[in-house]
Each structure stands twice: as C-alpha cells, then as structure tokens.
Image (cartoon, rainbow, N blue to C red; front, side, top):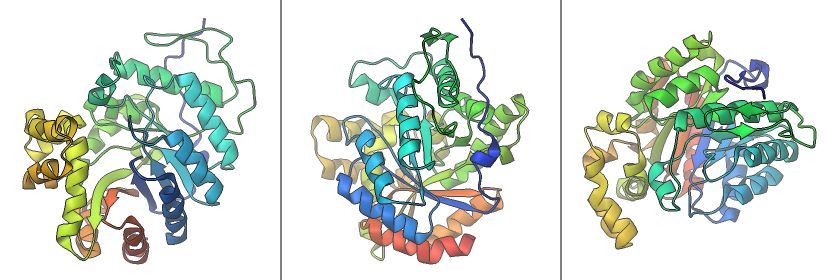
Length: 350
C-alpha cells in the first residue's frame, strides 16, 4: 500500500483570487436553518468573500445548513468550520466536500481539525493521535478530491486501493485547518491551503503567526502562500450591555474547550471555567453561566461600536493579516451587524 506522508497544498490560483484584503463571517451551528439563508444572502450583498458555519456536537447539523446556503447564494464562498475525523469518517468528509463543491459550483472550502476533546467526551470518543489523524485526513481528502486513490497505511488511517471516489470531483477542494495548539498551528503552515486560527484576543496573532510560519518553512512555503483567516469574535451594537451579553454566552459555552495557548494570553487556566461549565451542563442555567463570565474572559472578543472594532483590527492588518474573519456572536442582531460591517468596516480596510 502507498503511504501518504505529506499532502500537497491546492495550487494557489485555486485558493486566492487576488492579493487584496479578504473578509469572512463565521457562525456557530446553533441557529434555525432559515436564519443562515438570510444571513448568507446579507453577507453576499455586503461584500463578504466567505461564509463559514461550524458543526459542533449536539447543535444543528452543518450537513443540512451548508447545502441550504449554497442553493440560496451565487457568489460567496461557503465553508465548514469545522468538521473533525472522529465523529465523521474522512471518506465521508471527502464525499461531502466534493458534492458540496459540485452543488455550489466551485464555492466550497472544507474546514477541518481535531475538534474539542471536551465535546467528544460527551459521546464516548477519545481524541487519539490528533496530529497524525489530521495530517493523514488532509492527505486522504486531497487525494480523493483530486480523483486519485487514497491508499494509506498510516498511524491513524488504514485504507486500501479501493479507497477512491466513484465519481469525478470537479477540483481539489481547498482545505482550511482550524488550529489552536502550537503543533496544529505548525501543521497548518505545513499542509493546509488555508487556516482558521482563533485569535483570542486578536493580539494573539503575534503568537500564532510564527508557529504557522515555522510549519510553512518546513514545507518550503511562506505565509503568503496560505490564506490565513484572522478569526476573532466580535459583538457590535449601539447598546453595549446587549452586545456584551451575547458575547458572554459564547464565552460561557466555548471557553473551557479552548487551547492553553489562548488561556495563557488572557491570564486564565482551564479551572477558571469549571463553575461556568457546571451552570451550563448540569444546572442548565444560561443566565447564571453568563453572569459568571469575568472581565478577563471578555477580552477574548471585541465589544462595542464599529469604530472600536476597526481600532482593534488595524493592529492585525499592520501585522500583515490579509484576511479578516468576524465570528460569533457578531451582535444581538446578527443581520444588523452584517449591515454595519459591510457599510463601515469592510470599506475602511479595502
């Protein structure tokens, strides 16, 4: 059997359309499906380049949301942020990616990573060999979406010569890697077409970029060859209290699943989220969990006006960022936030 030890990045012409600033939106998969259709259409009208939806466990399925978005839009790129190879077999990820790319007429980007071990624990899955799992998953999906056989006898995947798609993919689908840890950030630089590193707080980019660059150098690449989406959380609204409340909800839900690398940036440790986790998962008391989010935790994201958002993002652009990605909650009214971003923030950075 062939052993796929390193995947080849998709040719850059298939990933990047220009050297200008790119803009994307990211959403969790916690909204009604119809909402994503409205949000994606608004994002397309506002001038965004990409629209990403997560597939976190026990929420709505991105396997239904993403096709709905594809059929409701015509220009904006659509992506998953993220799928993992533990809950979904890499063969099925490749099948879905190629089919979504066909449905969207070449607008699909596959975002993958190892997922959060805390969430995998819910369903009795162990996050074994995450770096090997993702390296081999990327290699296998790239082979399959290129119309090749993905025979692999690796540390994590063991496929034979019958592992190939029984239909012709229209192109190698770009693969974006979601990364938090130093090792995964290095792998991003080494093998991925794009990256979805979480910058919590946004200034965390100064820590993240060298780790990606180190991986890229290992593969003879530069950061300019990778579409790195600088992923931040933001909440925009005229009423600061309302903006802050919805950001607190996101931090309460996801804070304990973040990387130690991010907690260190904020002066936090995993145990700081224990009481919040208990309030959410055991007591199912959202209001209590929200109230337990501290000011130190709030530094994860950006709250306030579009001007405050621009001021924080200017530091990222000055550091060399070429793709700004705005993540949940966006604001208490996401549609209104998209309109503000399109009217005031995107033109500033274009």
